[in-house]
Image (tube, rainbow, N blue to C red; front, top):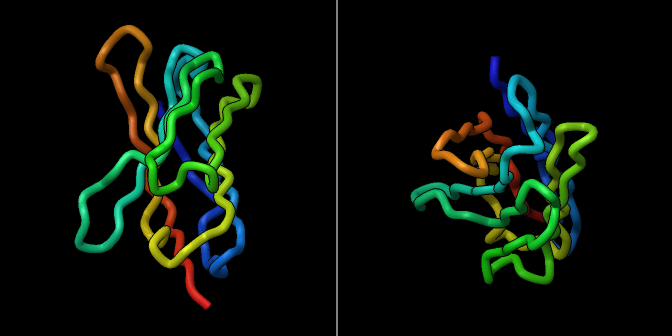
Length: 118
């Protein structure tokens, strides 16, 4: 049974930090690129950051570049999103996604709410 379980969301302060985790199970984690997406109310889901199976070459949306860091630990089947210098515009539901290296097979987590407010 494939599962992607996000955690670490909640209420963050403007200028503060949060760290999201996404624990994977039921598939070969190291064969999948991992991504974080977010969806704010009334907006489309957008790609925030992605990282390939080896952990190299992370990519970021311009809106989070220099503030967010994606990383992964293939020994723990977990991907992380360190979010610093939070702004209210970062408020959204954050989802992790796994995409197989050589096919279209992909999985989504259920999402975790991040709210940035003073």
